[in-house]
Every structure is written in structure tokens, then in C-alpha cells.
Length: 317
Image 1 (cartoon, rainbow, N blue to C red):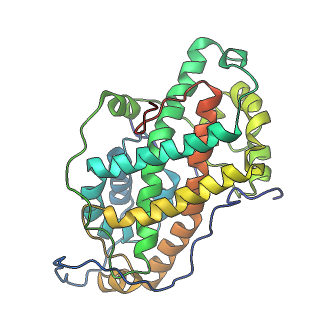
Image 2 (image 1 turned 90 degrees about the vertical axis):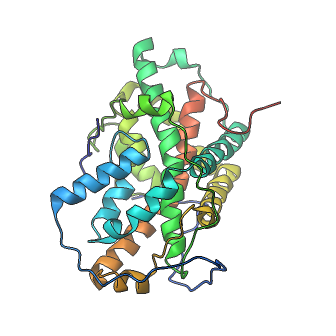
């Protein structure tokens, strides 16, 4: 049940998270990877085809809505059409999911160090059914955002390299009841002017509230109460450092994609993308990547505030 959402002052949401690098050139030591030259193709813009593709990507991430980062990348004509077939093979591997879940555990380690909730879940102005709905939505973001971070980081890393990936195992990820449940979860998005979203925008110094915050703002009583504590998270150096660590971990993980990917400007141009589309893709990557790392941290803090602290990969002894 996929649905597409509608589309300052204060400390930046990106505090402690590196901004996207300029278009520097790096060299990849990938060897033994056979590449096949492709004919130059011009990609016509078809809205229906683009929507089908973005929903396909969302479903591959086991996400019941189209993530904003994918919407942004879809504005670059031909970009996702060209790259997704190769990326899809990596997203469907156990290694890709395992790396994403390891990042979720990394975020929890840091959150537990700096954030001790001041109220119990029962003190939120919600009934038990509403609390479970918030938890269900947060569980979707908890699993989807690290995967999305890995995907966008790989594309960003590929921008300045001949190719990335090809060193991961092609072992398929196993279907799970939890992911099937996520695809059936209704995730709605509150209007950007729903309190306290204007305060969130000002505090995080962003142009619009992130999807994570809009999703939980559907329950204003929850977010108004939670925001009293969440707004202070970026003042903690350890919290900012871990967001930065997630950023770098995700970028370094690009080499472990199961399939190699070529996504630098030269290869995109050779594949038929226009200079305008290539520029749009770069802008979308730069706008999405640092914020994704930060939102992984915020989703983890929200879950901790509702008593959800189970690790995904690294289980305590």
C-alpha cells in the first residue's frame, strides 16, 4: 500500500554531519570486474513510468511510501532508470540489509549514552492503541532509513569514482514477517504547519520538516511532548559524532555492494543523461545524504523514548 507524500534559524540538522564533498576524483581499486559498454540512450520523461519506478524502489526497501530522497533523485531524468536495475540486485542481498541494521545499532549505542527519557511511554497523552501506531510507524523508519542512507551514500561515493561495489556477497536477503508488516503499515504525513513542525524546521535549520517528523506529527500529542526532549539532542557532541560516523560508514560501505555501479558524470553522460539531469542528480544527492544520517539518529531517539531498545545485529551478552 504505497503512497506518495506531498511535497531559519537555529542549529542545523546537519550539525556534526559532513556536507557533501565537492566533485573530487578518487580511484577505485576494483579489479577483475567485467564491464559491458552500452549504447548511448536518451531517456524520455514519462510521469507514469517514473512513479512506477519510485514505488518499485520503495517496495525493495520494504517501505510503504516513497522516501523523499528517492523523489528528489527521480527528478533527474533518466538517472534512476539507468542505475536502479544494478542497484536493485544489491539491495536484495542479506549483506546490504545487515549493514543497514548494524548502523541502526550504532545509532542506538550513541543515543543510550546521551539520552535518558524523562517520561515513560505511559505519560504521553495517547491511549495504548495510538502508542502502538506510533511505534509501528517508527519501526518502519528504523529499518528503512539506514537502507536508504546506504543507497544514497553509495551513489554519492560513485560520483567521484570510476565505479563502486562488486565486493559484496550475492546472498539473497530472507523475507520476514516484520518487513511484510511494514509494507502494510499506513504511514501518513501531517501538514508541514502542524505544531510543532514549524519549531522543528527552525530548530533543525531546514527548509521543510523531514518525513520522519511529519509522520509522527499525525499524533500531535506525541510529537509536542517528545519534542520537548528531542530538540536538545544536537547539543550533545556524542550524538553529533555518531551521526557523522554513520555518514562515513555508509560511504565506505559502497564497496560492498554486490554489483558494481558506475555513476560518475562521465558514465551518466555516456548513458544518455543530459547535463541538466546530471546536475539535478548531484543536487539531490547533496541535499539528501547528510540529513539521512541525522534522521537515523532521531528515529532511534524517538524509539528509545517509547521503550524500544532492542538491537538488530549486535545482541548484548
